[in-house]
Image (cartoon, rainbow, N blue to C red; front, side, top):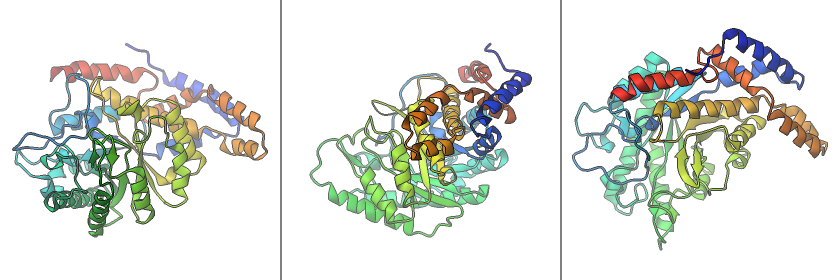
Length: 425
């Protein structure tokens, strides 16, 4: 068993840390309040390796997303997935949401194609959401379907195929609106399509024109923005679309700059050495809201579990320094089937929260003043000293305030659940 921290130790360490930060003009209580007010949306697809609960009359095809690994016990039913999510959320302090894909519909064993799904197929999810106080977010599913076999959906040249996916996306926005009404807070719908080509297409223009027209048709349907907010997500490349992606960064950046939808930036959807933090202030010059998919790519968009690395630190520093936190929606997007799936959820969410807390504990005004004076050495020196400040003591207080295990104690709960529930499946 890994050791736990006593409330007395947590309070003692926090008091010492609070005094150290206060000397730099930082209010740790205010930082904790800001962190507590920032929800993070956990992604359902980590719990079952992006399988979903669709009932099929043909073999599933039309890829675009793949989880690797064979750790035992993925959730095989909606009840299992909800129980696993509850366990993960019990080990995560602060506010959480839960992000669903359309393939997680519950159709009572009946075949319901994606253009025919409705709010009734997510009634159990909405009841769970309301009972547990966990708001839902939503995503159309443009992959793992026979009509996605050739890699094109909303940009497809065949009217029949394209219109099927238009109907699917419209259905998803209606579902999201129903979710928003049920939970009393907007459901964020993220629209990502894997459309593209593996190798050297001749016509790159017309698929983009078709996708543009399809999206305009989808968003023309009146949906109450108080309950449903739309984001569109770009990508550099994907499996089977290594050479060409219709919904590239340039395409969707142009789209959101001329339309009301918000952009979604996924940390793994750019060049392997490209980070997204510098894009944030540029986007907020023109847009009022931003959706983030917090992920970790290794060599490619591999969706590894989020850890507290420099990319995460830079991301949240930019959000806090620019005053963008209240306008940024934060969601996770990774799927690792090689490790304990509840552990993956908890590790990734807590890492994102720690990144945000570190940014909230930064003396932004002082750093900005040093920069304005041209004192680059003092600015850099202070940033380096802050790396060894006792953020961990403040984090443990956050866990304690929200009745979540502090320090390493949560790992004991994960391994116990693995032994008694996961391994018994």
